[in-house]
Image (tube, rainbow, N blue to C red; front, side, top):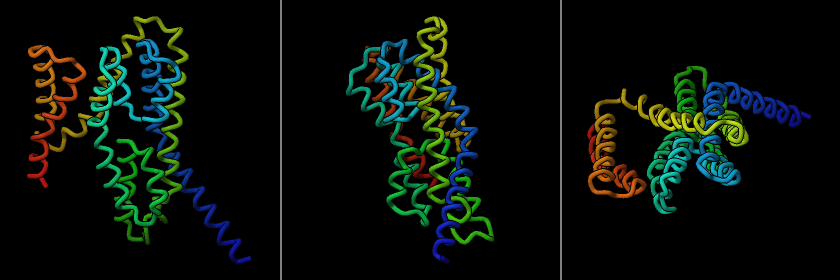
Length: 253
């Protein structure tokens, strides 16, 4: 009887944690849903099939990479160019996943492996702030008791994922009713996505701004002066511009 009460209390606590995660994901959901609609419209009007458009959101789930892929496909980039550009752009998730998951000592490795798939820049920020709040709380015995349980992270991570895919489907269905001129104007979401990634990082120092500027100049030089394919220009510029960043951030540490 005592075991049943303990199990019931534990299940209730996990459900509460899950709902807390869902609640804290709502601001992210609002942003993701609107941007995903733009992605769905742009992808369909670029000529990508409905199946491939939805599959990218289901399997890749990386807004900046998806917009970049749509743009590169529209420019006629090869599959290898798409893979390399996506790998470079998404490499930050290896760092983010390692940084966050190494702090969640109360969560099993199995749950860490599962949850890391749904990690994004925004959910990383929210969960990292929650982890800091937990560590600073004098009453916290461990992260799980203060909200950083697998249930909390599941609510925080999976809810935006569901709405990202719902937004993609909505945009894809709306693309048949939206005039191409309006659809073309929605490509501004691509630039907004990259600016949203860049601007918060600029506060960390001049190094980020210098690297971003260098990448833009290198890409322009490769494409305009050396007549390199724009897809390879993006890949090469990203790789070359990131090299000095290794030394800059090493010095900051």
